[in-house]
Amino acid sequence: MKLKLLDYVFACFVVLVSLTPLLPLKGWQGYGPLGEFYYTGDLIQLRYNDPSFGNDKPHVFVVDAGRPISLIEFSDHNSYVNGCNIYTNFTVKTRLEDGKLRVLYKSAETSFIKVVEPGEDYVKVTYAFNQTMKLNLTLWRWYFSSVGPFSMPMTRSLDACRALNFSVTEGGKIYVAQVSWEPMPEKITISGVLGEGLNKIALDFTAKEVTVEVKLLNPTGLSQLMVLDLRESKYLYPLIAFTGSSLYLWMRRIALKEKQK
Image (tube, rainbow, N blue to C red; front, side, top):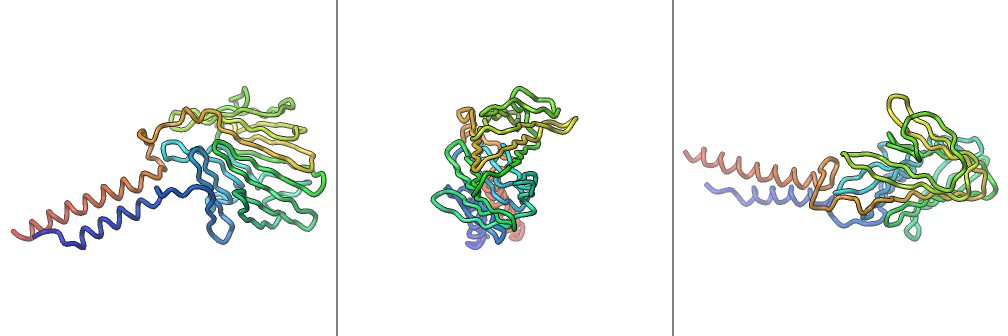
């Protein structure tokens, strides 16, 4: 007894559905009632208001061998405007406009606009106020391998500078990036958790507009697609689907042969 057409249709359907993560969806995609937005590029991926976190606005990833590697987060939960927590004290309206994510934050006292602009190997985040304001901005990562020349999780205040290099390690590989800003911060503090690592870059500004850019410095060191790390990779589901479908057809064939005996 041969396999039925329905068996082959079922197996093909499973494989086809698993291929949807491989569709060439580049640029911005918006989902959900809470204003979740995702950006996919060749080297950079962004998650804005991801339900898994909620306060990462945005969360920047490096795409390597089909797998997103967490690089750095802009944390609304730990950032303040004139002493008011951005995450808890402001209402938010978000829209896509000309390839940029524009976010209006509004409270009873003030309002401001955040613009998230991704590029090939960078993301630029701008905070625009209608008057000079104090912005205490926190950038996170669990954990950085190094920030500037430091790797030990001690609290340090750094001298004023225009940019700061940092690195993260994942899967035995080191990813190096740079965070730069305009204007110059009044204060730069890095800190971490003893016994764990560095996890926080705090920047204090007094300005009408603040721009922070995160740029990947070693894109040429990323893996080629022929060498895949399947953990969290978009290639994992097709591999599982193909293997599972093949196993299903093989077991169905065996079961039918046994039935004929």
